[in-house]
Length: 130
Image (cartoon, rainbow, N blue to C red; front, side, top):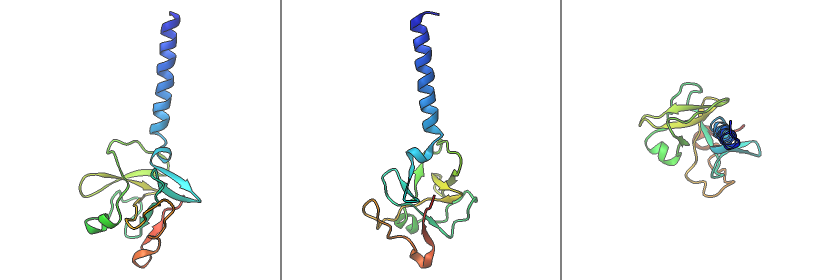
């Protein structure tokens, strides 16, 4: 095998490893952990909703609820693993879930670090914790 061909094969292999590691690490691209809390890639706080049932694969926050609590939407073909999964929304979109619980933002959090949604609706909304 020529030296050029060997270099091409090695380069393709390295690129494949980078692509695969990106696909298998949703927390690196879609969420992060800050002070034990999950935040989106935009550094905005993420929440869970007590009316959602862990592991059901569905989100119960629809209509006006989803306007106030925007879901963390992902591509329907996204590959997730570990504590992450995808749930289906009524409109056919996919939402990222952590430990079976769909993840949401709070519309009144205006800057990274805001946590004004915690405990809302008689405690139904909680900070997403890692």
